[in-house]
Length: 437
View (cartoon, rainbow, N blue to C red):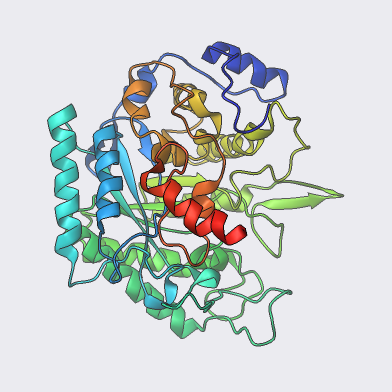
């Protein structure tokens, strides 16, 4: 079965669970949606249900980073979904930290634009469902993949790699201290705009993620774990102080990177095989919890690909990377009580993603079920999932990756090409297919 197959022959979550188990993936799968409908508490606020729409860049903001018509369109769709958490896409905290000239970005001049968008989302959700979402804004510096207004590369590296050109010089300690200031100021603006929480992004190889793996960096921000965590913890402490503890704090974190020490975290090499080593990730999560972080969203460097398990056959290939990640979340959560964990990767299971989410929450593998690409393709899936019904495979994400290809340098708007063709199929034909031809 190829990744874009619809699994129509499986018919029920129970048959899907049996298929996974037959191929060595014993996941909890639950058709009953009761666990998805449960509320949760964090930072004195209520999350009305356990479905989380995860951050996905649209790269379609206005030149100043404020919401465009396409941004409004996307988040209105998410508001109509009724998801418990809507986690806004990564917003840059510095001009030299944008990965795209059209990346979302707050400024003191247009806080009102974000406030208006959030107010509209609250109105929509309140009128339709009687509650409002818990709204998180992801804050980031894009590090190595930063680009200027003309799409020119301008990497800001946290450490040197063996493959780096001689001219690449890692960011100084002084630049990192400025980044701490920038992160705090943007968190305060997010608070004023009406977000319930900010996510200090530390995943997917962006600057803070790379800094957490800066084992061989000298100075205040490299070497020992306490140094590699220094910037992140300082941001957390100062944000809590500046917002009087009223702004919730979240962190999206890699369980493991795509390479073992010293080039990444969370993996170890045993002969020709890579396997997870979550000991440092567990310690990082404990440190975040103890500093008041209420939600940790566990991801991976390449969550759509298996990193360390044996090659899968065509039947289970779409699920192996997500299975690896879910197992990692289970182990981390077991060792770090007292914080809400979001599991990523559930879109990989297509129409059975909500059943995997319900089973994982029921059995204590994670606390919140995270969906990214599924929400772009099929935002109405949330209410169907909460009702305990199986999703329509003809409306689900087909895992084709076209949304990611739309984010290639030179393109500025990403969305679901297959299920939301106007405008994204047009953009794809003009900017991706046309360029390849």
